[in-house]
Length: 155
Ligand code: 4NP
Image (tube, rainbow, N blue to C red; front, top):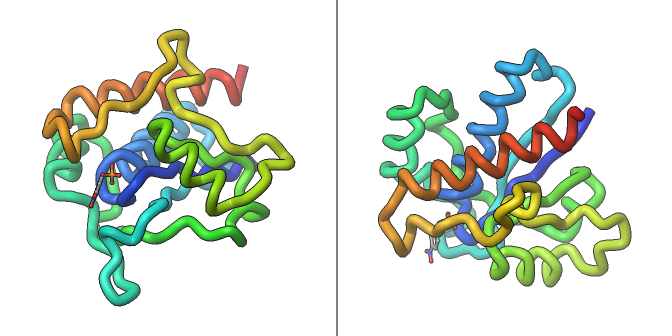
């Protein structure tokens, strides 16, 4: 069982899209029983008095458009230091996420902290639709990364 935690700033756009795209890829590959997949935030911007926001509506619309099933009840939750032992991989979307994951999780003794597009040949950062408003581009980056990640984990 591979336990994967996708991570972004708010856990309302990029990491939930990665979570549900990866769940779909895994299911389509017949590997549902072999993966446990979640997503978390590095910041509390979308957590109000302990209650996280739902997935951002344009991100929900993007997944609906692409036929990606998702949990419309999912709420943003914060990454915590104690998560380090609960997952095998922490996969950030950009360099800021990498810095923040290192700060929250501490010394990465087991080399679990990764950046999604580092699994692809192009590398770089997932485009951030919070600022670009381009959910097509973010979706395409994340699909590319998750496809490469699944290939890496199953080859
Ligand atoms: P996400 O998008 O990290 O992809 O969920 C963001 C959501 C909220 C904020 C930034 C990015 N924010 O600053 O509130």
